[in-house]
Length: 418
Length: 168
Image (tube, rainbow over all chains, first blue to last red; front, side, top):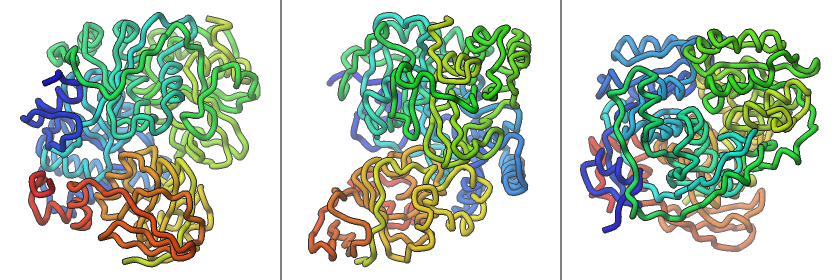
């Protein structure tokens, strides 16, 4: 019998049977969560099914982050419904202003080896900490909340090994955009993406979160990293060292395929409208005028992301025709950004600071684009209509590319200044 | 057996095209949201679609967000099934959970407006306009078990739990 991938290891432990790629198993769920645009349907399905109690209230979370704070009456009423449900069931609530669900899950909740299901496709983010974390619909999560378990088909795994050294001005975002361009928007559908290699070992949890977050943009069920010293350091920083455990794949695990990528050859990348896998090297997009630059989200709204942007923006002004909108991913990130002086740098550069949350990412408030407008965003999706207007155009790139592009008013190569 | 017309779409129909984020405030008012189904892909679709019609698409239908409202409003519009070359994972699972039939088939030869007859039991699509029969790939047994009950909640009401061994 061959060894196990990370997905097989975690699902073996959580199902109590030998879980191998292709098997259908029922696994214990360590964390189930919803957010404010998927949660109301979960609550209604939970009640429709006749469920009354949560299997594990301490590890059931309702996040109010997508409309934060709510821009209209209907979404406010949805949030009222979620707050009431939390009171009735003793579920945990993270209210508006705390930040994006995936960021809070990373900071406070996820543990290596956990099975995590969230009614949000970017639940995959927690794979950065070595969790089997995947997005599901409202009904699946309602059932997981009630029963404390769910079913999975154990995924085949594509191993991605990143070797060499990341060049100056090239970031985790550029790598994951490159990978999505390479394998396509359904290159990993139904599968696990498991990351490894020397570059990954030296990557911070923030960088790993950027990569795991976008695994879904290649269709993957999970995007997962082994837990290691970087994971331990992060958990210590977050005051929860006892949540650490080491988890890594067996050396003789069976992979569907192994992709070797040489980091040294990577360059800054952009995803062009209207598909995430429509990626190009920065040279091919340089000079395109941008009306809005959006820095933030579960993909790139962490302190390291704001830090690299602040370095580029320090003492500079945004282009007069370009607005820079910044949304820290969490309250913790905003606090750090204030203490480190980044917020002052942003304000002096003419940027607009949003409260922690999803901000302009999904088009329901805080930076909806006008007809024909072009946005360069650090988010994970550029689908037609994503930022509230099907007549607008979205490019995706790293925070460094975003910051320099805001100064120049056009898509720019951050290697010019880094 | 269901008879209906084909509404043809291309690759990568995202959940943002089916149920846009800008309409998130209508998600607790599904009849109203359903009036906008697929609006950003085809603004006239919601008015033209009739009960029993089919959405016929190419690759990776339903990619993107986990919003279950996307398959829900397709089902509410009366669509008999979504037929595509491939589906995104979360959309596929959501559609089964809410009882919206999906069929995986080579859709290249089906054109917009073709009259189709779908035999779910045998997994066959009859393109009456073209006089062709198209075979479909079977849905995994366990998921078919959920779909046959009309979705995940009716399934759990009947069985009380996930019954893996009954669908081997």
